[in-house]
Image (tube, helix red, strand yellow):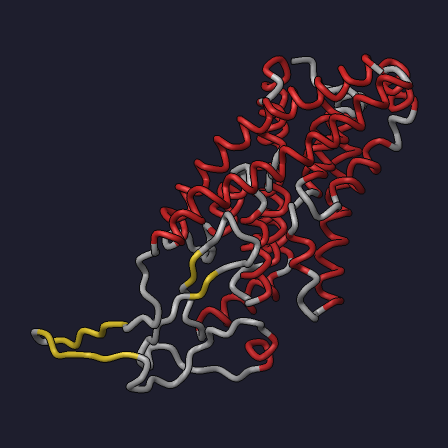
Length: 352
């Protein structure tokens, strides 16, 4: 009984260490979000590069943003897949909570970044029809939105009117988009204008005040980051207890021996775990890698498949066939990455 008490105590201490790391990153991201929300635009030739770079932040809200923009035809398939592959979720904080294993996260994140970047551009190069469809949509759309990293609600569209600068479009492609931001005819209710010097200056009248109230600021910068950090803490605490109990009753050597004996199944198992639409999957994969239960290739494949809660948001859209294809493409890429990288490193962890 005393030994089991030590298992729970060790699990609590290890989880508490992670809580401190997660809290630092979460509060940092909450302060970065207002700086990024109005400035990031995921269109043009740099869309995939920008998307993959932002996805490297330890959060999974951006993958939901990407999914939302994809549904609204603001984002190409290649950029979406690139963001999914690069999403780091909670892997970085987990590794940093183990100082002796912290460096192991660097090759994982670098590999995810390169895979997201290369495959993102490659998919758009192959599937040019989808890229052209997005470009056509943006030509007839008021492309203004705000990203949200701390919420799982996708993007916030910005109300504006281009005063006839963008011609309306009722083609089938635009009709299929879930984007409510297609250009409508300008009316006096949308905006007002006034003469200034030799030109006409149009001023946009916003329906909502941009200045956040004290309550909103408190919620954004204090409450939400705290709740998110505590949620991760509980996930990790439960996982650490499970691992602790298994080690107590079975033995760490036997568990690692079992996983090593089934090394050819481990990459597929890791990708399946990564497909769980929750940050708990990245925590499990990171913990297994740290315990040397799975190798570098399995961990990489599983973390590539992990896109936070984005898959839940993906299937909220009614275009089931399209969403299934996106999911299967991610699964196929992740499995190939897992086995190829496992073969390269002999199904083991990196000697760092």
